[in-house]
Length: 407
Image (cartoon, rainbow, N blue to C red; front, side, top):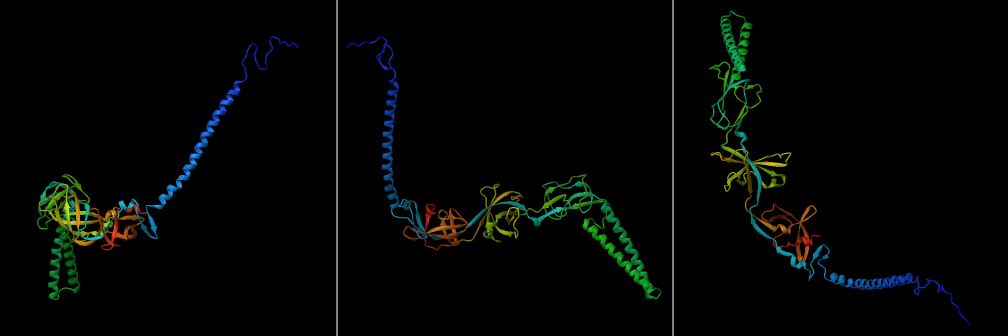
């Protein structure tokens, strides 16, 4: 049998004259992708197995922690179990009584004593002719301060002269009426009228005299329109609000102020919460930045009965003798209020724990067992706080690390 092969024929899917199939590359690529996916699945399965094994190991660690907790609660008590690291961080000590002299340090300032301060007001309207003093001058009682030319003064003198003349006239008329009545020559009505006129004239004269006295003018030595104003006390001129040539038409406006600075106030502003800490007669120490290292000792003289509405603070004043004038109004100062020494239960401030609106401490009821107790602390001093109520001497409390137990 004879087989013939024609030139140009070949296997299906081959090119003429080529021995390598042209369509096997897709199959090779598919095989490579399959190998990669298989390896990835194997790695994923291995990781999943490791994760499951790790998850199985975790409960054992949690069980170990649960077997040795940091804290345990026994009803309302807190217990620190053996092996807890809190035992090394918590410190317990007994409550002790100590002799304390509580203090409060508050800001203050120097003020002129209001009972020794006079505002000089013009008694009449007029023009300032001359100022006899200057700001800061020391003055004596009766010393001339200012000279005023006043038409009101001239009118007051004129009224006084008129009242004096009328009084003399009515007095003569009364004497005549009395003489006539004595001899039966006059009517009773005329005598009564003369007496009434004399009384009215006397009243008017008294009024004009009082007016001159109020002005500060002499009723005997009349100076027409010129009035010399004088100092009502010894002191210093601390303010001047007029000048020569100025016209004074407001009788309520001060033209200068005289202060007696031989006594001054040191006024402290005490917060409302510290009012129970101060009392009249209490010892205080005052220091001023102007005199570093120098302490002024005094006593509380005035405790205001009314709080300042804007600052909610109470003004407490200490009176100081100031003969040398070292304390000057408006100086800044610091006042230390001192209380008499007293025995008080004290605890470190680190033992106090804040719980909502109350202050508590942790009291040891048994070894490493603590109960919370509400206390009322007093003002703190040097990292120590007196306890007004809630504790007794000898009780053991947590003084350090209590915040770890403050849940």
